[in-house]
Length: 169
Image (cartoon, rainbow, N blue to C red; front, side, top):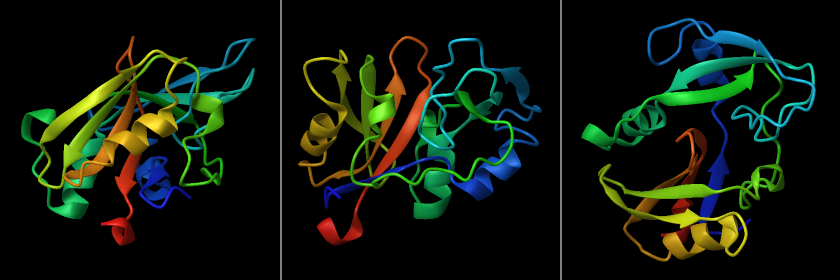
């Protein structure tokens, strides 16, 4: 583990509710992963395989973090599309101190937030020169950074949340 941050997939209890009604108040759209697969999944932080049943739903990651921590994200409380398995997959069991290898290699934007919920800045990654892990470590060098969200550049989709590890403060 990095000792500074931990990577988090969408929590199982949150997924249970989202599979019924998403954060936009709608039932999720069920889709079957196409012949090649590869869709990033936020439930288990891996890519979908051909023929897997997925759910496309709206998710507001800052909203839950704010409820849990007392932060006030205000206008930064975005709701956006994510793909998850249509039924419980067991979640993510990877190393919480490293960004999942299966999700590396594409353009990403990292958005850093303070404990109050304000955006502090971020990083744009081209998928080649700087790894997500290195960029996360650099962002967490700022002691004001409490959480960093990883998103896709082209679609703005939320990929994963990272949070500062309490002992590292």
